[in-house]
Image 1 (cartoon, rainbow, N blue to C red):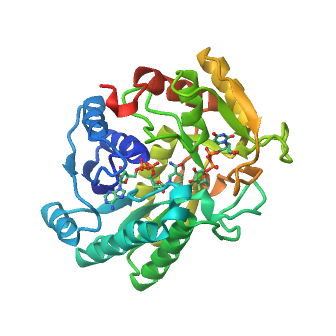
Image 2 (image 1 turned 90 degrees about the vertical axis):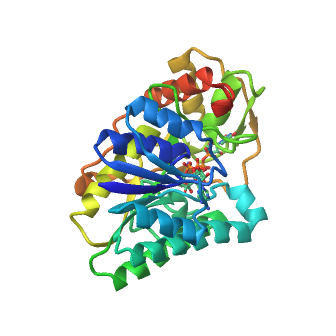
Length: 338
Ligand code: NAD
Ligand code: UFG
């Protein structure tokens, strides 16, 4: 199958390109490199020993997108491209609505023009809002608390409306929980710019000495040890979920949402302990105030993906920590380290 991967040079996209190539698919990437480095795709090709097509273009560039659809007889699209920083989205909402929503509209219009009806979209557990009880099923109420989350929520609605107009379409909304880890080669991984927002990259940067100390945001939540509980999922499991979703989309029609999570909750302190045990590294931490907007607990009910997509996560928290550290220790400055 010829698969267009938007945002394919990014963290989750690059891992998914590997699994697509390994499953015999042809991969065409469009990425403007606004949050990624071209080395990720060079390494995807050296890991798989297979070639992919890469277009350094913006999804908002209608003509460029048109050209790509004209050149390649695309069968399906996996749509990762977008901005993803919650704090930045609060400061620059219009930029988020423009980049995430407008680019999706342009993508859908182009797909429709070329008769491409299979789309897998990167949604997020953030669409479940603040008060949802875990484990969270897909039919839990949806809401969002910031512009980033609203872009995911609005795009889900847009895609549901679009699917209604095209009986032959198959649109899969994948709601990721907390992606961590890296490819076992240590050649590709997460490469946040500036100070990391997320827990795992912060932990690995403290372990490597790039940052001094981890701040644990609150230890007075109603959880086993008072710290926040999340459903961390290995990025390779997540990537494999996309391959399964893609295959399933050729046996189904309509628009459907799936959680991609493990179904297990891990607290911040449990993750720190697992990381120290798995890697032998020390992670100094201090307890600080809660981070505004955080929930105590958020983990998936992953049964629907297991039943309908024949997918489930198999990599545990120890493997997630080991692989995150393997990438970070080999590439302390991310893709800047050759
Ligand atoms: P990422 O930033 O590493 O990858 C996104 C890629 O899209 C980047 O390579 C960036 O350069 C590219 N891009 C952005 N805007 C573009 C545009 N207009 N045209 C072309 N390329 C563009 O992020 P990621 O962690 O790989 O996330 C991928 C998707 O998954 C995003 O949509 C994100 O919102 C979603 N998601 C991520 C997480 C997470 O924690 N990483 C959780 C839930 C959902
Ligand atoms: N945390 C710390 N210290 C840090 C960073 C995080 O204690 O330096 C804690 C948080 O308080 C939370 C847990 O670690 O309890 C996980 O935090 P992350 O920032 O790694 O992940 P979140 O679950 O808060 O957010 C992620 C994505 C969001 C997405 C959300 C829901 O970053 O984009 O999942 O899917 F909206």
